[in-house]
Length: 143
Image 1 (tube, rainbow, N blue to C red):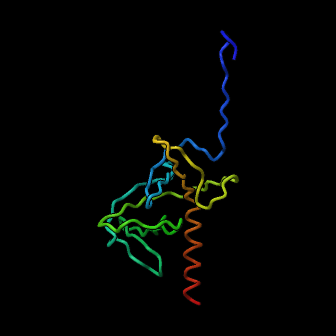
Image 2: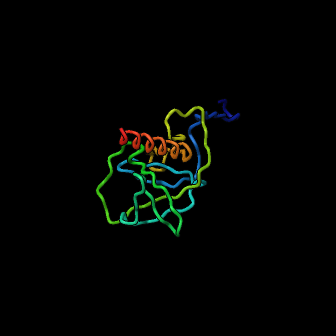
Image 3: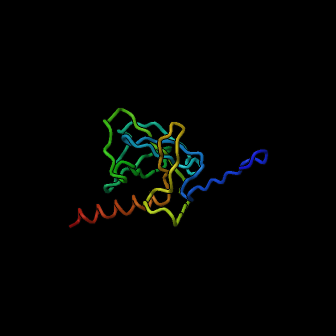
């Protein structure tokens, strides 16, 4: 900088640091961001509304069967105390490939207003990861 001339700042952000609108979801003590462009809706449901078919959890929502993927199971997070209600987020799947991201199911990170970090969920990868885990689980049961 020079007196009377001003100052120029250059800020370089990593490609995985994103400025997006996201729906924040809490899993145990962790907070994740789901890109709002992927969210169709969120619902508060009773755990009794969840059914099981061939070791898959499903929900019948307005006569449409929806597979349930639990983030706690996919990311190995201890679930908090069971309650009489739970929230589900219904997403549309769009591929979000980022060759710089190494964590399956995670597209990047965002810094929240309070300074804490929230991981941004890659919905496409998350669904693939869930399908792989369910398939492996079923193969293990057959052995």
